[in-house]
Length: 454
Image (cartoon, rainbow, N blue to C red; front, side):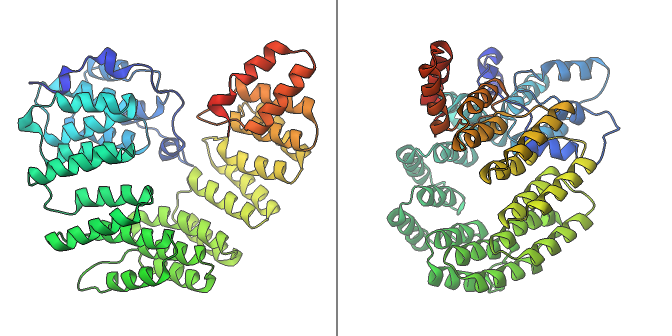
């Protein structure tokens, strides 16, 4: 049975995903550098609208006499998944299966199962799983289904799959246990979390680094400082485990939540000693946020300078730095950083200036917010729903309800990108419109309340 080809593409691809290319994926290809070499990777990366099929791009590439390698397609699929372009990843996976006319490996099936869940939901993922021949339902496939249930927080179904895996003697390592530990942690089920840890001990299931990180996160989340310190000491025993920078970041968060700033700072310093080159950029971005949370501007600037020395400054870095400066109430610094970003980055993402616009709105600096939005529009940059929603809320707060209504109109017309409109502001606009006899617009606003209210 050619499993991946058994799906009808018209059913698989649908129009269930909306939006635009993710910020993270744009950053990968549009930082301060400009791409010059043509490649299939580049063509797919820039075609970010999920409503547009990738099939014409793939077909045109092949028709042009260019070669396509399976490993290249798999690499692109992995990056698409990483940056949440699931619909396109599913299209590439299906196309790859048809082109090479091969039965999928368990790993291919696991990826496909995850993509079907992301694009079509749990019911479709379950149907996909049922259609898999028993001979191909390996550990990897069952674990993929377990992850599907965990992602959907379907506790009963996840536990049932764990039971199946027990019956099939698939629970020989910590990987499925880690999935369940994460789920119990998210659901706040301490009793089952502890019971599963005990089960692992009784069955001799070795804890890997992920298991330890999950436990450390759990201790930090509930401010169990004693438990966190004991486990961290265990992780620092080099004869058993390797402690990485993220473990110390987690501990720093735990101390910060418990109000222990000195200990939190010590953990951040330790984390810096364990950063490897592969994750250095992401680690610095985390450190920017945490040093700002500690109110330590000197350390914030030090990390930012180290980050810039890496040679690549992505949108997400500027996003972290600007938000950190705002957290420290340094609006002048945030404005200067925004100007630097605008001068150096070729990919304009309104989420970055929205940080400062939101700060202006909260402080009642509406003229500054209006001025920036006007300049952005003049430069051809379209504000998002979030931009206008923040502005509408500020107008409402400052008793400028007519302006709030106009801003809310623009918020509805703009690119929403999953943004939920402010329920209080939207309700106030509805009441104003009703009072002034604009029933049609009031009803249009009201239709958005159940879905978008917060």
